[in-house]
Structures are given as structure tokens and as C-alpha cells.
Length: 156
Image 1 (cartoon, helix red, strand yellow):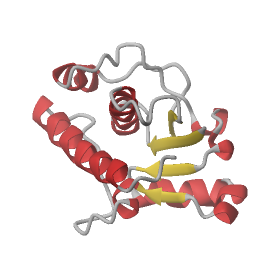
Image 2 (cartoon, rainbow, N blue to C red; image 1 turned 45 degrees about the vertical axis):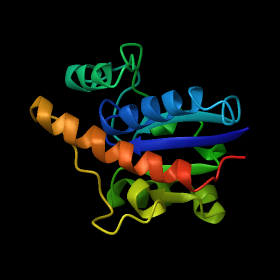
Image 3 (tube, rainbow, N blue to C red; image 1 turned 60 degrees about the horizontal axis):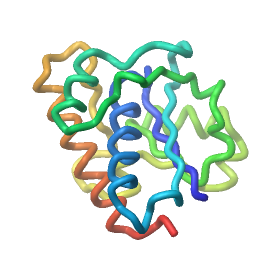
């Protein structure tokens, strides 16, 4: 079983949406079902916060129920046990590598865009505080990256 974690700041928008979308895609793909565990966390959050309302609404538009999501601080998560850690921004990646030496040694921490070789930027901008269209834009950006990730056939 491969373990993947998405990381952002508060674990209420980007990493939460990425994890929910990837779980949905895996569940719909019989070849991947049961082969990947998906987690998410935030570098600066308290455990238990709900996903932002606009994240929940955006995921509903994708047919994904994210109402159940509760934020997890990365320091209270199983991040050290992950096979792959994908961060929303370069800053998140730097903090994970600084604070988790064992992950630095594994060489398995990237930004999501870096990992899927998106040439535009390494960061997925935070929609927090923006209007619903910012969340939709962010979700589409994440989904494009997840489709590239799945096309890489890294999950066995």
C-alpha cells in the first residue's frame, strides 16, 4: 500500500481538496482501488478545523463530499511514514524538509506542480479569502496536476 500526503498551510483548502479529489479518482479506478492511502495536513493549523465553506461547495460541484474533512497539523500526522509528500507551495516543501530529516533523506518531498513537471510555477496559489471563482480555479489547477500524476503510473 502506497501512502501519499498533500500539504498546504491550513489544510482547509488546497491539500484538503487535492486529497479528496485523488481519493475520488482512486475509488473510481478499479486498478488503483485499495493500493493507495491518501492523507493531507497543514503546516500551520490546529487539528479539527473544518474545510472552508467554499472548498466544500467547490468539491460538491465535482461530486465530492468534503463535509467530513477535519484539518490535521503536519506535526500530528503520519507524514514521516509517507511514500510521497506533495506540497502546494515551495515554502511548504522547505518547511517539511527542514522539520522532517527522515523525509529529506528519502528524497520524496516535492511541490505537486514540481512532481508532475508543470512548467508554469511550483506553487498552487491559496484561494483562502477569495471568491468562489478562486476556489474553482484552484480546484481545476489541482485536478490537472492529479490527472498528470495518475498518468505517470507511479501507483502499483
